[in-house]
Length: 277
Image (cartoon, one colour):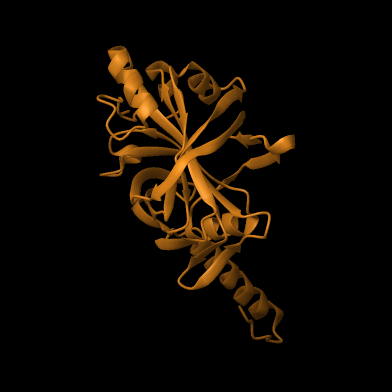
C-alpha cells in the first residue's frame, strides 16, 4: 500500500492508522480458494481404528463420530479386522495422510515450490464424523492440517486457515534395505519401515470432505480430490511414541494399515468458508 505524504502530521497519522485498520480487517476475513497440487512424488495414509472413548478426547464433545460399521471404504486390513471381530465395528476410523508435491499454486500463482530433495508436504490428521464441525456433507473431522513449508503456511493464513508444522525424515538402510521413516506430528512420533509391493495399477479418483474450524472464526468445508497416475500397496512395520490421546489411539488400534502409495496425476484442495461468526 502506498501512502501520500502530507505535511500536516495529524493528517499523516490518521491516514496511516486507517490503512493499518483496513489491512487488519482484510486479514481477518476468510475467503474461498482452490489450490492445485502439482508433481506428486508419492503420498500415503496411516489408517487405524480408534477406541470410541479415546476418539472423543480428540474432538469437541458436540462432534458426532462415525463408527466403522461394515468397514466399507477402509483398507483391506482394517475391513477384515472388523469382519473377524464385529465389536470393532463401533470403533472410529482415523487416518493421518501425507502428500509430497513439487509445486502448489492458486489461480496460476505459485504458493510453494519444492526442491530436488525436498518436496512440499501437505498432511491431514482426521477422524470419521457426521457433518464434521457442523458442515453439512463433511465426513471427516480435520483435527490437524499441516505442512513443513513456511510459504504454504503463510498462504493458508491469508485465506483464514491455519497449517501447523510437522517434521519428516527418511533414511535409506544400508545394502538396499527399506527406508526408515520418522514423522513427528500432532505431539507424537511415528516410525515405520517398508516398501511398495506388486506392480503399480492405475490410480482411482479419491475425494475426501473435511469439516474444519479455522482460526479466523469460520467453519470450513475442505475438499481434497486426487486422481493419481499410479497406485501401489505398501508393506512395513510401524511403531508410535508419545503419551497423548492420538498416540494411545494409534497404539490401541487392533490393526494399522499404510498406503496405498499414490504418485503422479492431479490433486486439488478447495476451501469454502461455510459459516463466519
